[in-house]
Length: 140
Image (tube, rainbow, N blue to C red; front, top):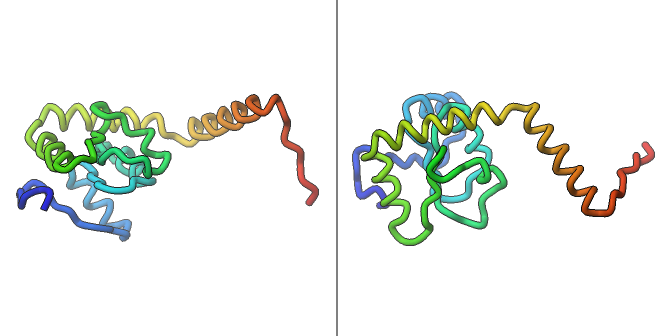
């Protein structure tokens, strides 16, 4: 309904088969998730695909990786926002290229070493807010 029957847009619903997901990612220009986003964001960026979603307070923390206009689109949740955003993306080749380049650049930042360092920084910041309390080992 949102795509108005446009030939360039196919909503597949949930896909869980890894082989099928990889095939779809290789054949797609973007990952459009009109609802809750999760780890699919990381997988999309790993394939150099921009993520298109709508603004929501219910998204998982991975939404922080999506930079509107840089590596994806975060569209207004209002009526027609998704439709207009998808149409704009489909009709603008330069935008598709730009967002794909941003997705690839983001992929390079999502390696395990950086994720561990970010986690460590987060724990250190949380401890600093508690007045420097330290973690104590629990007895086994």
